[in-house]
Image 1: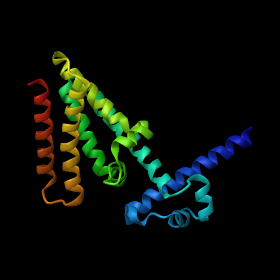
Image 2: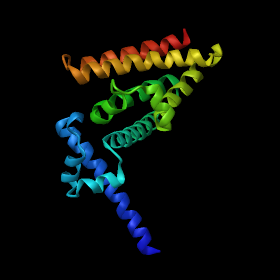
Image 3: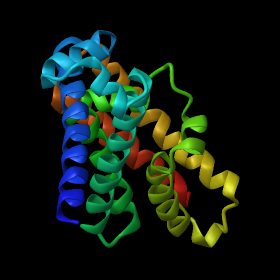
Image 4: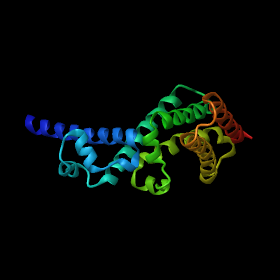
Length: 199
């Protein structure tokens, strides 16, 4: 029994090493540079061993996408739990989202890249739905007196997400303003949308 547990543990360690090596390659060279051969070289295995764990490069990208959503959900939950007032919770969650995007730039790129349809992603990966659920629950709480429909909550969520994701995209591609100015724009946008929830 102990040897079976040891084998399973070693397999999981190899799987994690493959993902870690993949992410390191991407951080150093970009997503276009990722290949099974480079991953094998990085962990000092042969390429066929990598295929025993992941059928192709896309399977690795999907697993890194899942990892990104798990980290993002954790960060947003922790941010929410630090505040009691719904408006402060929303601000904290969106700031955590912002911080994640720059701390985990490569994961954010694969999670929300232009070649990925987010709606389709939610259907095949439940983790992708967590940020929406966390934020929409607080939006509903703020708008409780208005008894918002599901569509109204969805519109408010996508208003937030469009602004935040747009600012992140601009800053990932081209940094032309200081962090202070960018953060002020972010906070002003979040504050304005929160105000619109109760208007």
